[in-house]
Length: 154
Ligand SMILES: [Zn+2]
Image (cartoon, rainbow, N blue to C red):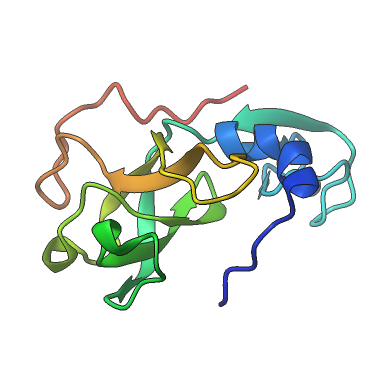
């Protein structure tokens, strides 16, 4: 799936979504809606609450490693793009702090806000959400921390 560039105006409108990874959760059917919409696309309910997916742990659904990267991103090569499922929502983002050889689907990842070097003439994109492997989750299926991933019942 190709990444389309967004206009500065669109980025501005989406800044909360972008920087906080803002999503909505339907109070009626419990689905997570990302990007958020005023109405639940699954059941039509308007009874939604906002939530930020930032800092929530999820799992890597799929990823791609690009060894050929556009000019201006050379120092970031290889570029790893991942799709993570977090709270039921799917987030597409580049990955950081990861060795391509350690990548595997199903691994624990979490979205973090990272400063990025911008070649954009407006300087709009100074921060971006990236996915990184969960800290302290070196072993698959480890039941290490029980406190972290509570399911936020309301
Ligand atoms: Zn719903």
